[in-house]
Length: 453
Image 1 (cartoon, rainbow, N blue to C red):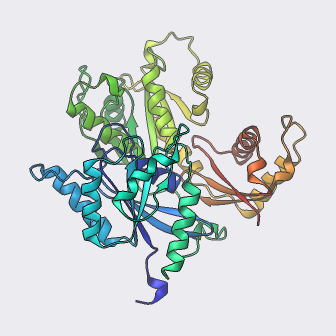
Image 2 (image 1 turned 90 degrees about the horizontal axis):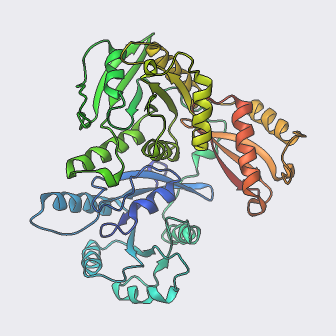
Image 3 (image 1 turned 90 degrees about the vertical axis):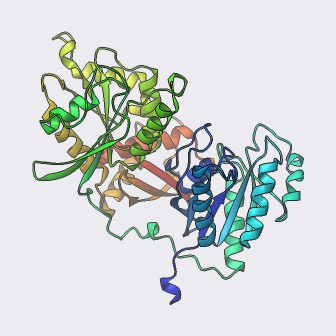
């Protein structure tokens, strides 16, 4: 195989359950792709992502927690998936929990890795809260030299770890392709076809009823008893010459209110659907308003970078004097991270403004997958630099060049003179003005600041 045709090098993340493998995976790929929870065994399949660092890119795969229980078919399947990942990998990251110290299961995983004969970096996670780095010395007994202390949750030590990984690849003669995301001239993809819409919300807010009203048939089961929907239900649908895949999900409850393992699995599947969706349709009960469970769910959506259309359902139950603008304002005040979301008032029961939901979704999708031209980026940067109404302390000389590198959500790189000198207020100001000037609607906008060398 010619060198140019070789796939990018692959990292495999392995370890026992609940040591922070998925948190590390998410931190490395700069996305909330892999679900993170204190419930062991959350990751079962292999999840792949790409790491972009210092102008090159390579791949990473997250695996399920290894337990080696021979009588448990699920554990056997997880181990098999991890075995496949290790066979593919150029380098393995063996993750341990620095708070627990070396456990018997860590020793089992170490033995399993030695039989695989792959190069391994030993990574000790959760080394935060001013923990003494001498605490990791005991992990040296597992082999593979000096352990690497990190905190995936807080990002501590990640840069040093990536630098060492790159150095290893270079020393081993493993070629890494240049990061294609830096090629700003490369055309970016348009709105996906079909567009995957995840209908999400708390139990009994009307997700299934809204889907049935849109489809004009009783396609998904509806009942007053919360929890009727267990597994995500996908339905293909065409509306105004556009193709959609509508996905009804189980009502997402907070963890503390889960009553059974089935509820827990349904919740996990619903959250996974969020991460795979192109646009989320968040359904809120107009008569109840936004409650804590809603805020947690939509914070997850925002963190995952998903475009969001909030449907305030059961609008017919509100007084006739209720105004959508006031509801939108209350949502923005209660949850500032939702200011980007589109808001639609509707009633699945009466059909009021239900057709408006898909119109708004399409507008949101077109915004989330819109590509700014080089001249538009230059104009926006010029307007930001010349803004005489910028907050005190904002130093425009920081920003040199702006260009878009991805869509769904819109993602930008900004060349700056000194990243470490930038204040949080300056980055917040830049991102809010960029969103306004570009006219992005219903989608979060992500910005990465790169120091000019």
